Length: 149
Length: 149
DNA sequence: GCTTGTTAGTTACAAAAACAACTATTACAT
DNA sequence: ATGTAATAGTTGTTTTTGTAACTAACAAGC
Image (cartoon, rainbow over all chains, first blue to last red):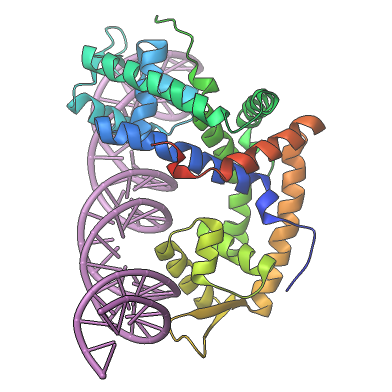
């Protein structure tokens, strides 16, 4: 039985992954069951609901999602009439994406569910932990990935 | 431009996922480049390195990994001589897994790298943030996933 | 004009994950 | 003892993802 002072259970990337997984699971079930959406689709939906009409690459920039993922998510969302795509007049490469009424409704429903869900999550923590956690996560998620290497 | 008080960038599962992804990326590169390992393989290796000989399902219980993932990770690790599998005498269903010398060496190397890497990650945060973050994550990761639903 | 480079987005193929069904072995209840 | 359920682990099939190569349109330099 080896003994050393390294604890896997305290290794930050490990903890982050475990927490992310646990905290996503129940919510994932919601958008999957109610709307048959995948994680990327949900994200695209939320970006559009939150910031209005955007292009695929704008979403990609904000959400750190690869363009192929977005392309496929947009396709599926369009097929299911959650969003519409309209070509830009001046630059025919870009497409403006916007939620349909149905997409808007799904967004609002999920947003409300998300709010409640987050509330439940936070109830596991003290208020101070909640605040600091969020702050720390914002810092971490904004780290330049190339910073180490 | 819709305005409402819900901020995607502050939604906890979203933040957790983003941070987990960012924080895993650089380290993932290490075990991939140096040992050709996948994430699950690295986890299995670490569990064995940390807790000594274990069975596949013990690892699964601790790491919350599905048995099929473990099965395949163990296969690959065994092929590459990072671990050995020996059948239990009394219960012929179970196999005891243990690191080979080579596996032990890889584990130690990666553990040291992990330590340093974590140090760099933490340098983005204040000491207080680091402590509280870890505590909060431990709480979150231990939440029963069925608690909501 | 034309050549070269860049950007938006798609498509094709390979790698990995998820899920379900399976074998083998042990436990347990009648 | 024997039929049923449970456990350990594997295998096969389907989804998703990752990666690279591609088309189309614009931009810039000459």
